[in-house]
Image 1 (cartoon, helix red, strand yellow):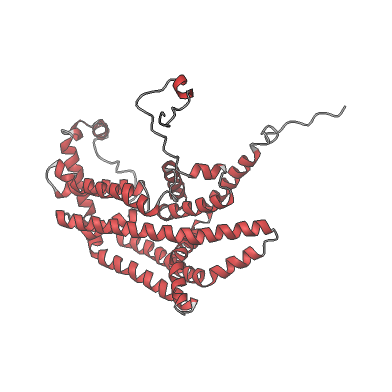
Image 2 (cartoon, rainbow, N blue to C red):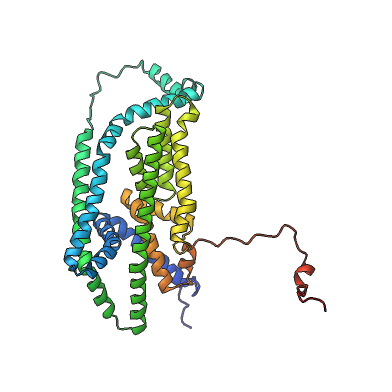
Length: 390
């Protein structure tokens, strides 16, 4: 008799679980590639999403007998002008806030320490450091050479980051223009090359759904976020809070990062309140005002404008943002939600009842139970007749 071949780990997996395991391996491999090629993929993904946002403008200009190349140039110029004007308006307040940030943090830290009843004096960490300093008499050994490493200055770091950011921005703008001019034709030719007729039709339906739904989603979210920023800036100006335009612009930007962005901005506004106001209730005014406006936007405005078609499970959004923030940093946080919406639309077109589509969708609300619990006999009894007695 021939010897029985040894059982491997793959053989121990049930046939029903093998497709799911393969999909997980593909996801892990794609995440690894995204991490390695982040410098290349971030401008491409950002340009693709920006092209989807500007595509309706190009189509509208095309209906006015404007060539596609000229319409793309006009749409890109308008978008860059709007973003550039906003950055110019908040540049001076941003520079002032960055200059005052170390002092603001120190004053807020002093206020917090004073509020906690001299916690710093009884801090065990400080006591341990003091004891170690006394053991060594607080004097360095003169026989040991001293090496002083000077970190790069703020101007040098800003110049390095600005150079990289300008290079990525220039590459993204060029890619946006070419996506707007040649992207549609390239996608159509790729779909036409598919040998399977059913697969070709499914790919065409998914592409049309993405081109129709993603620009609507991104335009609506952009308008809502800009409206929230204007509301924050106006409210802060009325309340007398410093730099209302800067905080309005930050409110617009961080609202593209659901849950995590507003939480971080609320902490910054609390530090601002500690620095600007004397009492603790007054110090909480900027953060509470922003939290109230953000709550109205999240619970009333966004569901009304978008509906439940784009509703995604909040837990999935947070995990998704953490993953892409870890892979790509700040660009991952900003691009995470639009990419998730694209994935959701594509999965709904390819496999509406699949596992991944079900995980992405927001769970439906459970029906309310009646105040008076019914017994099993009452539940199984026939409903009473509504006919009038003759």
